[in-house]
Length: 272
Image 1 (cartoon, helix red, strand yellow):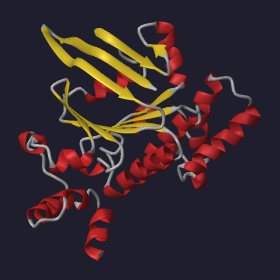
Image 2: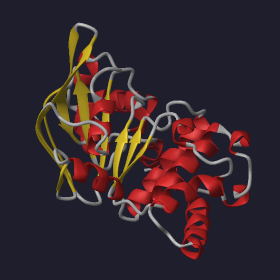
Image 3: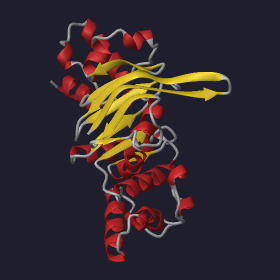
């Protein structure tokens, strides 16, 4: 689905040259979930915009669904395959109601009025906004606006969704809703690139790529990262409470393959 080879990206901030990405290699398979994490300025958002054709590598190659994004024509075509959910949903709002907002992208793709109507209703129901078809967008909560942004992306039938810190501006309930929608879409076959700084959003399933100063310093599974690696301590991470409990259990002799990565894991362990 996505092939990144020896990619670097630099830009100028005044007279200073910023190396946002340095020699990145990463592969994302169709239907895979990959989480990308790291501190502010580590290169996560630069990567997300590169995967959607918004930025072009200074060096190296990015291929998405077989399209080489060095070709300007492919950078437009890739938006049919990959959609990006931004941190701030207001950045994606173009209509005054959810129906108008979702319709905008479909109109640009040349959908008929009949096909548009059924498609709009389908995706709004999919994200739980079926009762808000004609609501004023400004009246929606932050979580509802982010769900609308997801619906607008889904209407275009992408193969891959990139969530660029899509929960960072939401309250705990909104974060849980958006994360749940993303997980549900992945389970149904969507390729998901989940970019976050929230360690509790690094699931036990799928791969994790940790960025630091424009490089990938870890690529692997959550269990290895949290229970075998010295990286969290070096980066001074505050581990999720469940993982902190897991480390206590590890010192008490609990096998590593039984240590919890989420609340459900902890409940299962306690109830055994």
